[in-house]
Length: 138
Image (cartoon, rainbow, N blue to C red; front, top):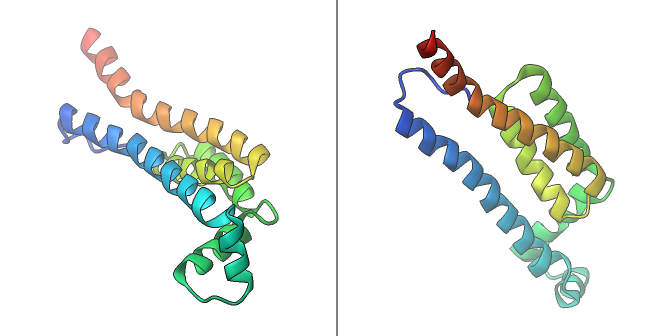
């Protein structure tokens, strides 16, 4: 993330850790939705029988997002956009979509999207401290 210069180094490190922690939290939520709402036959039968609950709504939205690899293509387009703009925020959003897509059966486009977005995100976090050390060495 391209953070402002006035933020102290220890706070910058904390923000960067929160970025990666956010991706891990999204991974956990995606796994929870997959293993508690998408895969169980009992939930599928209840939702197909016409039960109207929040879990059926979340299940329906999750299934629609990976039905035609839509989540994967969103992740892939987001990672290309992050690569072109070198934006840490776009890279983070693409990484979140990629992690979710990998858990929700969109393997091919989300794998590429995750690799590209994580590389852009890591580069955006390393770039400024590297420049600071280069300037102080001169």
